[in-house]
Each structure stands twice: as C-alpha cells, then as structure tokens.
Image 1 (cartoon, helix red, strand yellow):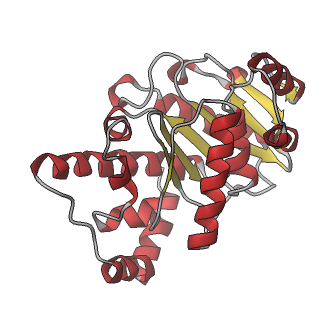
Image 2 (image 1 turned 180 degrees about the vertical axis):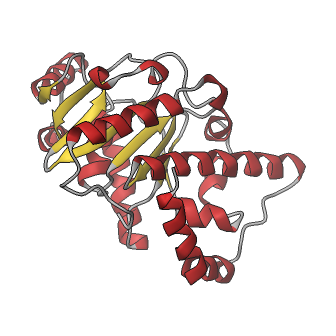
Amino acid sequence: MTTDAVTTDVEPSDVLAELVELSNWLGEPGRDLAILGEGNTSARLGPGRIAIKASGAGLRQVTAGHFVRLDSHRVLELLGTERVSDRELAAELMAAKLGGEGRPSIEAMLHALAVEVAGAGYVAHTHPVVVNQLLCSNRAEALVKGALFPDQIVVCGRHQALVPYADPGLPLARAVRVQMLRHVAHHGTPPKVIYLRNHGILALGGTAREVRQITEMTVKAARILAGTLAVGEPHYLSEREADRIEGREDEHHRQRVLAEQH
C-alpha cells in the first residue's frame, strides 16, 4: 500500500501493543463500531506472519493474550480449496496457528488477503451502525460512486471497493479477493476501505493510527451520505475536483502530518 507501512525492525511486542490499543479504541461502546464479540483486528508481524484477534473476544476488552499468530501464507492457500465444510475450515485455520491461545476468527482469510495481497500493516474489520444502515439498503452503491468532500480523499483514498454479500468464511474471502484485485487493476493501488454488503467494513493501513483514522473518516462519510439521501441526492466532487485534491502537495503534507499524530 502507499502508506507508512510497518517495517521489519518493529518488534512484534510493539506491534501487539499498538494492535491492542487500536482494538480497545474500536470497541468503545460510544463509537457504535462493534459490540459483544463483533469485529476483528490484525497486524503483520513479519514475512508470512500475522496476529489476529481470537474468535469471540470483545474488542473493548482484548489484551495481547487474545491474539493468535498465524502463518498467513498457509491461510491464503485455503482460498484454493475446492470444497470444505465449516468444521474442516476451522481445523485448517487451527493448523495454521504459530502461537497464542484461542481459535482464529473465520475471517482470518480476509486479514491475510489485506496483509499479503494489499500490503497492509494493520487491518480492522468493524460493523459501524451508520455505515451498515447504507450497506443494508438498496443505496449501498452510493458509498463508492465518488467522494463527497476533500478530507474523504485525503484519508480514505480516491476510490473504495464494494463487495457483494457473501457467506462469511471462504465465500466472502474469495469475493473480497476478486474486488481487491479488480481495484488494483483499475486504479493502480489497493483500496484503503472495503465495504461488505449487509456486513461491515475493512480498513487497511500501514499503521494502527492510519487504520483508526480511516475508520473514523469512513463513518463520517457515511453520516454525510445518509444525510444527503434524506434531503435529496448526493452531489459528489467532479473528476477534475477529485483529481485536484488527490494531487495537491499541501494535501500530501497533511497526510504526512496525520501519520505522525497520536
């Protein structure tokens, strides 16, 4: 990804500390991003290794002990499996464990894709109420038809991806892979935001801080979009206007400043 990606000199303990902080922030009740055991987070630990939240653990309460280490290459190999039952898939994910307690989330394949294919350093999957109000409606496409305001481009990128509803597990992972590769082919870079119809979002970033900012801006954009749909139709920035924002040096400076903020 064209982000301040995680480098190999970052100790796994530091990565886990940032992952825990991000997870706890995402799980705060007032944010309406996830409740109970909803949502999951992950981070790249090194070549072919990721840490992902164990299945069922609440984001608000997780500690470093709630994260499972996985062989991300082995997880990705599951996408080539022709037919596999839910029980067999769970067993394969357990076999991909490199350490940690608990059972890997069934959505581990989404995180392996985000890290290994899209190049993300950190990933957050949440179910924001305001975003799902649109994703569960017949206006979900409005989320990816264009940018509504400059900061949406600055933080979330020029384009986002929308994935049709698919059963969580292998079907969803395959659907995400299709849209991810299509996005790269059309736009030259992986998406920072992936919308999942009737489900939630994936935020992909180089750092935990960037993932938090992407999630925040995605929620803000959804609120604004919902408001425009309540009073009329959205008025997106034109191609020329969006190109201008994407290419401005002062906006690139703001991106760098945002990356340094705590």
